[in-house]
Image (cartoon, rainbow, N blue to C red; front, side):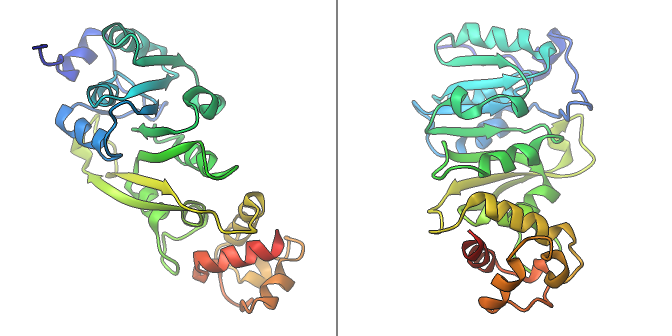
Length: 272
């Protein structure tokens, strides 16, 4: 029977690591909590998992222990020796790539049919999510299980006519189903961040017929770009949007935050 893994606090101390504020890092040291996060995507036995920002490898080990084959992208080269040590333990099931997740081709690296599970660096989380939600559909990923600041997580799952509802909500909901799977207090991290966090689990759904993803991106960007303004003002820079909205019965005196996801889909379809 193999011995239990070394406590993460000792791994971090042995390699002289500390969380970098500039890189948006906050480490989770509780291995039981990391195992719970790894389990949120269902059984990982034989599954391919793409991880961004593994840091000292706490979640990475939890994914490997759950039976996954992991591809991890890490830009902080201070963490690479700890990850290399983990690779020596799992030589056929862990691939570590040094690089910036914003600049790598995740589909090419992870392959179609991978699951994305990551404690995302806070400063790039939203940009990565929008990238993974864009493009062709069905996407290359089977599910996304991602750690965000709680405020961002609530924006992803927000309902219309609430303060949190916006472009990110529509992007996440028009052809996928997001839910908050776990909320974490500040004390779960080292160092504790200034805000609480949450894990969001997202699965793709069927894309509405006749809707161009690029049109949806442009539409929501225009609509929420001037959030407090009526649609009559916010959509006037989008050619054809005002007449299309009127044609399907959307009152131009409404604000973007009052439109349902279904109404955005209908309007995007008319403009596609």
